[in-house]
Length: 401
Image: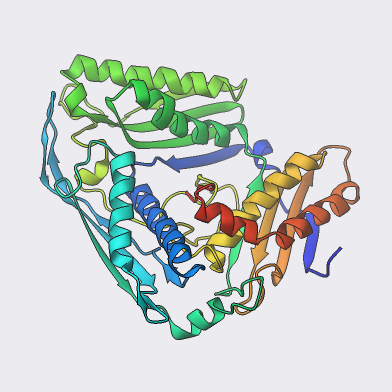
């Protein structure tokens, strides 16, 4: 065992699954905040890969300040139009010159943003329905120094910050996460009327789960109010089926609860996202690194998307703590709930956190002493392999929101 500062102790609350009230949220990939997260992360990956191709290593950059200003639209059955386009500004820092070589960071960013948006929100016409701009300054000299120590195999932390992860997911968390992903996956592939802006809120009181879905419908594929009502009912039935796969509890699903059919006020869009009409967005305002917003659990407020994957703790420790929590629960029997908190110290190797704090709720009849050594062993091993997180992020193998 290494000399890393790893602490394993009992958690100071009930397991979330055993609490009387639980609230879980996920903002889907077409939500304005998620658009910002997705674009920022897409740009970050493109820059990292381009730096490796050009100079053999990832240079200093961060694109985690991307902002979206909503547009204005006039949806109509059979197809409306975007009146005033959405404006997306990619903001951050990037290395634009290295050892005399110019690197077109802003061009790379614009190309990555366009590819991501065309794949994720196909109804959104790039350059017409959405205008994308980019402003990338140069990085801080001090932080570039901390970043660029080639002779050090493990990078130094760029900040004194922390990340939080937990496992296993509760039934409500699984329903919320899986429902959005499958609505924007298998369901959307055969239901083009459903836009990617799907927000899901789960509430559990005791053994009763309510799932509230906000689903943006695309006007081009809906002829009238009856077809709209059928589309809403189809989403409700699908989410109910997903929920039944994860729980035996009673589940009620509600879709587009603000609709007023008599007044003609419904969630109809031109592009499939509320960003077309009044909803702004920012990186880091939505889902945490595990894809959920979970007020019953500890969370870091760091934006994970767009940060440099080599030494930016706001990204690495949130992803790593989640990975550690999942590995522990998979490999160690007798754990009902687990929280991992990793704290860095600027300038310190990222595999040597200031503290790795693990809080455990064990199953009935299982003592902390029964699992403590196994937990510590897994935490130590994953910290020792921390640069694997960097590789996975650069290769697009991990999601950040």
